[in-house]
Length: 270
Image 1: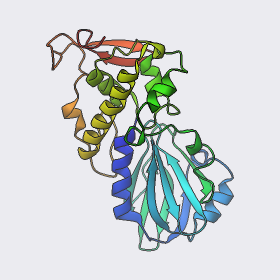
Image 2: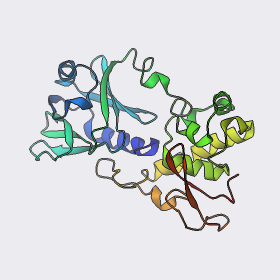
Image 3: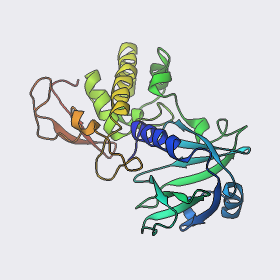
């Protein structure tokens, strides 16, 4: 699924393609993508403009010209495309925003898991879904992650996937963060020391920064508009089952942690 680097890549691309364009029509092919009243959604979006695109964790936030914002979560396979307005709709394009300049912004989602919802500018950071998000690694203060972890009683892998603990990490980047930190994903959060928690924060920053520079990770269906990421060429352990660890040469294994496929070097990670 799109994680922080992929969503950030989408945000950057969209800012170059949709700002200040007037929306003259919205076509909700699959209305369940929209949380809340669909008629209110259509009324607010029609004749509005997108004046900026922000990101919080894995959420995109379209800042509108009036007093509202549109919050979008791509979930498993959501993506946006820019198309000529007359271009035929594809099978998986579910919400289409038609612009005055004869282009369109199309939300494409094979599984239909993605969600959109309207919030007001004065409260969208104060209410869910954004209010419950933990800090992103780049914004975490010293010891912040440790204080979150000491109140948990789960595996460190599951804790890092919890968006209320730390925001933006998904399966790929948690595996890579744990590898850089030399921490076994099965360890309990109560065992993580202060130094290890700060190391995890710094490792997550390094992993995410590199992934953002490379446009994210293209595994299966992720694409940002029509641009594909390259971080998959720099993965250390994720998807590398039965390959040699790049540090010690031991064989990387795949296990299940909290129901999630997890890649680990049992020699390096303790």
